[in-house]
Image (cartoon, rainbow, N blue to C red; front, side, top):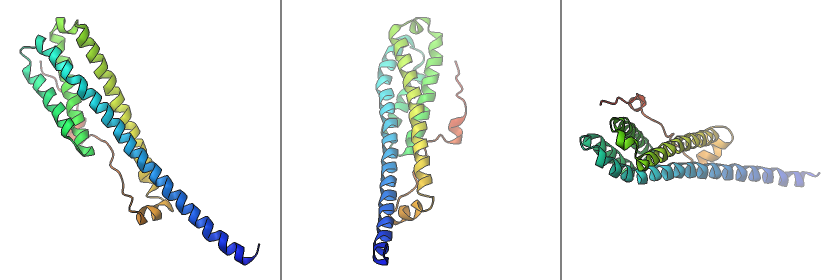
Length: 183
């Protein structure tokens, strides 16, 4: 191989490596966006189920308006949340108020026996599990992305193209405390 050929191959390899790094960062960034969208899908599903649950429960829980108000307020907060932090807080608040609602429902045997209530409770419980999985997947994807933009040589490309660290979907310290239900 002569010097001229060698002088052409080296820059070509470097350019290909840079293109590969850039494309892999874009791919990861899109995976992060998709993972967050999946959380939104599950949050919307839960939000769509809640009005039905509230309507069913209203007829039975005439004296538990505070619990229903908290569920409705938490649902509204999550629908208007835009940032990851606000969605996480609103989602945790809604989960807490649903736990309270289900705990209070224990006082109403006829409500617990209602097929509609049991079906909605099961669907919401399943959706809560999907939300937890979606959060975990999102955070795993964010961790991979954030690691890639911080390690050499990807960090050089990330800095040139202004890739920024993504935020994890996490609960604040006060939100990690267990829920107290007063009956």
